Image 1 (cartoon, rainbow over the protein chains, first blue to last red):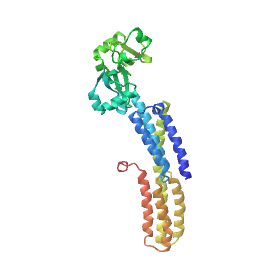
Image 2 (cartoon, chains in turn blue, purple; image 1 turned 90 degrees about the vertical axis):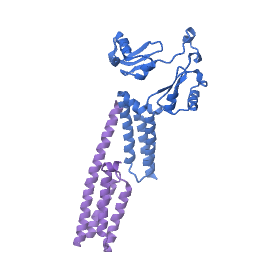
Image 3 (spheres, each protein chain N blue to C red; image 1 turned 90 degrees about the horizontal axis):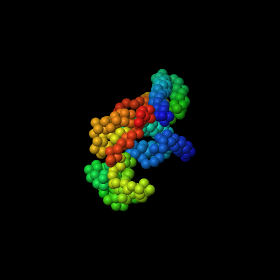
Image 4 (tube, each protein chain N blue to C red; image 1 turned 60 degrees about the horizontal axis):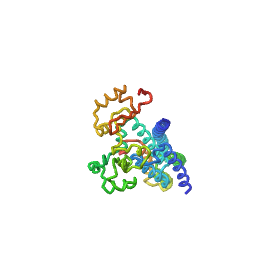
Length: 227
Length: 123
């Protein structure tokens, strides 16, 4: 009995350490990889706690290995966009310009009931009110309502906004984002020409978005701040 | 960056501990094989068998204690049961005395193999 009690204390301390070392990312909504790690850790922790015939190390080592691999994978994902998409997936635009993309729905195996339920949880009860919706990597849907359904603010009172999609990310961490470029109907040559006029190259840019009017919003990398 | 460093250190420590565990088991097993060989030799010679069995039992106590934090307790329990059978077997002049010693050796080999990372064990 005392052995299980002491093992419980050790596993508790280890799981707290594991959660802390994984960082705040772990405490919010879970991405697929984080969900898998969390389920695995809880399972391994229980096993080593309740079976005294197993050495404690057979519980401690896999937990630490999973946590370390998660940290190293998130570090690698930070450096490589491809790896990031491989590990966490990528957000999918499910409604654009008020139209549902049925191919994306099919790909995500979402039913209309799922979409409506997610919209309702975002406070939208009429699908006609949606201008743009994205299924995030965590599975939640982020919704932008049409301009006429947005709450009135001093800015919109002065000049009412047109119904348009949110700005598209076309450069992130110096990489040109093909899906963003396609969404903005922009080709790479045109983009490079626009950047050249600002004396910038894509690799100098941390993030660049383009709005529906074609205006670029550029955030340069700190060490390459030329604009 | 601190987390990355901690992760790399933890992984390095785990790998080092894994390798040390194999070496540790190997050295303890070699000593156990030595004790088993001495018991068998004494049994062949027909003298000092009780003393050698007691030496083996004493060594196994520390062997069990040290290896219990690395390997599954079940195998160690089976080895312990096997050792406790040696003395009654010898006293009753059982034919299976030598076989029991070899069983003990095969248990120790099983422990060694269970810690060695080979593909068929991983998969």
